[in-house]
Image (cartoon, rainbow, N blue to C red; front, top):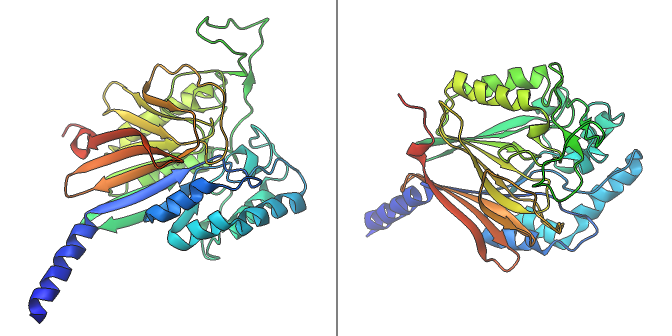
Length: 342
């Protein structure tokens, strides 16, 4: 009887080891009650990833920024989430400190220290040793490995190029004012040279699934707002790096825009590039921008994203779940389709 019980326990352990759940979201205002965080906590995912705008700081006063982190930390739903899973995080502009800010924001080092302190970054972490907050994690389930890469799209990012109606022509498909146009300067950057070098080393590591977390959208089409499309040469550099390193099993998760959508970008010589955007833990927007790469969505209500990596079925589940726990986006991808040809 003892050995039968041990055998059953072993089978149960194997079954559990075949799956990994990573929830994620962005745009979480500290003044709101944040009930979505309790929904995520009830799910008990293996990890939860904050993609940015984790608070709305928007200040150059460190005391104000600190007080807003403290406000989030006291929120009962945040405290519950923190008790039910492991929280990992990167930032976007509003917790970086200023709307649409990049490398010239003068308080970025202060913001970094407050960010790392709030999220209890271990003191021996490499995040303290280099500029910016980019980092990566490696998880194992059974015999498989999962790599999670958190980019920093703020600390090194060059200035945006403003849309000027006297110079630029607006496509008729855009029913709203455009903020930005693609930056054509060859030396403008999204990640900066050191982060690009680091990212190449990460993509050369062995992994079965790779998740790149970007605070701003990667896989959508140009919409005149802030995203990777403002730096097309940097986006092409990402595609070239993935091809050069033959990094299989890669997809993007992103936030920022206050709605959810699943984008698929098809690039010659590559497997499909997916970007699942989850943006609206508390924030919402009154319209979704045009996106020719959108294959599901948009979801305008508050929500969170969920990745379900199932090694038994050899699939990757991509979901958006709203505040009523209704699945609004669901895409199941066989992992064999996220591979370069041999």
